[in-house]
Image 1 (tube, protein in one colour):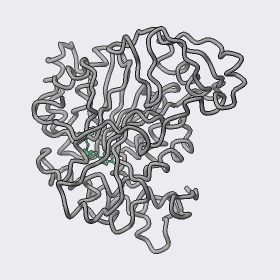
Image 2: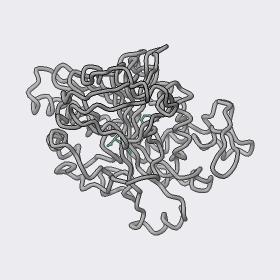
Image 3: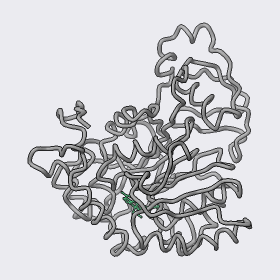
Image 4: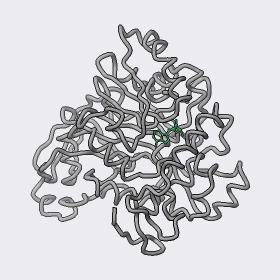
Length: 395
Ligand SMILES: C[S@@+](CC[C@H](N)C(=O)[O-])C[C@H]1O[C@@H](n2cnc3c(N)ncnc32)[C@H](O)[C@@H]1O
């Protein structure tokens, strides 16, 4: 990708934020992969050999959760087998709303913590596929498929685990337009080629589908001396994108503007050497939702009314950091959000009517909306914290 961006500090090729390619003297390699194979091998070693349970992690970057979790989600999380829960290395809650019957893909599913919780929430008619490149992680996940089928009382398992790279979903046999939702928890930062991950995710999502994922971001480009540090990479910090690059990349690939759901600062107080190494760089764990709209969707601002039909969110639906829809309230939304609500799995949960004349004439509503699209995780209240995840669950 020959894209050049204005950084907060300097002009630089975007691929340099996505890989260790800047360790080459001339900047980017042609395909932005840099030494991608080496990174894959080192990450496999980290999550296959070094880290066996949460206790082996050097920081809490991969152990974060929002402070408020809906009770039906807490229940699903607490049903996950303790052996699997002890190997949860996520940085957020990747449980979007409106899951019944959905086909979900989890990128970098590890030992299956999120897959099994989602398996409960999608129900017997839904299905969850996890993909991971590390055999040791997949082995544990597969060992507990039948346990969770029994626990949820399903006649056959509704989870499966596939070996493969998240940058090459096609090689793993995942076809175009097959998933309603993709989730991922603390994995994209580990990839040497974030653009390929987003492109592949976009390809396998159905039109109207959603990528809902938690990951670590930095408030600037992470410098080379940190990117080269294997432990910092394994701990999900060295490969973190500058958050603005995620926004640019997502739009390049074709997604709508990423919508911030929640964010929390990563606290490195427990690890002084790492804290000293990063200096004043701030890292944040963020959950974003990115929608894939059908081709040629027309976008007009609208008035929408939430009808209270999403399980567990009957009185209100928090859609992103700026939009919480109260059941029955009439809300003016911008053109993009109106298209998302009409073209996604939320279509039946909203009544949509034309925007008022006043708001139609409002250029803000036409493009970004009165409230705007929340994207900056360093702005506004931060609401994730280090979780108390462990063998007993995540709540
Ligand atoms: C930090 S762990 C998170 C695991 C899981 N999402 C969870 O929350 O417990 C990262 C996982 O992503 C996998 N992974 C990292 N990079 C990957 C890639 N490029 N392709 C496939 N899997 C990858 C690792 O093998 C590991 O299991």
